[in-house]
Image 1: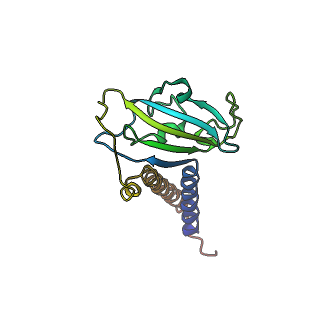
Image 2: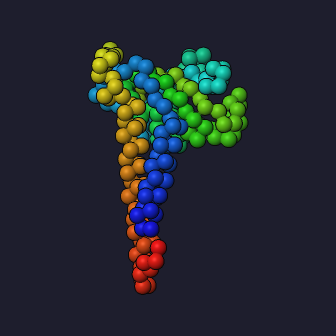
Image 3: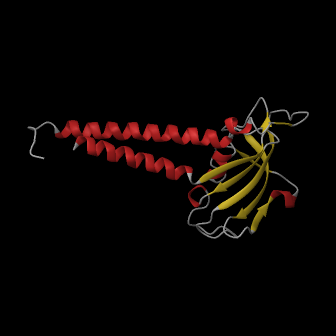
Length: 189
């Protein structure tokens, strides 16, 4: 019985981690070398084009306004898909973010974006406030990109969250079992 409870807890924790990773897909379309990547708390400038995955319809574009969008990364000023999808990015790097509803606008209609939409953003990091722009952008070779890609970093973070959730679930199950073992043992099952 104890083993079954522990197994079920671990499976549930793993499933939550896998679902979370399906809400954000990061494709690095122009990998760039740099000494300083974006991190939480940075004020960044990003050019983007946003489209609906369902029909490819463009709903917004900073390129059309000829002005990048500026915000503080990781501060909840933008959708979760941006706060996580633009981490560890170099100036000049380009990424396509595919963002599911739970990392986007959820079940809300927002302007031309219908509730429950999966969003696709083509992004380009133009600058990080306080970080000098490189004199030239050096792109990574295609053989380097997969090992250092943002997708691999996101997968690693998801794996860490799954491991942490599994550990917490195991601790809860151990506590429940310890609390119920105060009485005599029941071996009939």
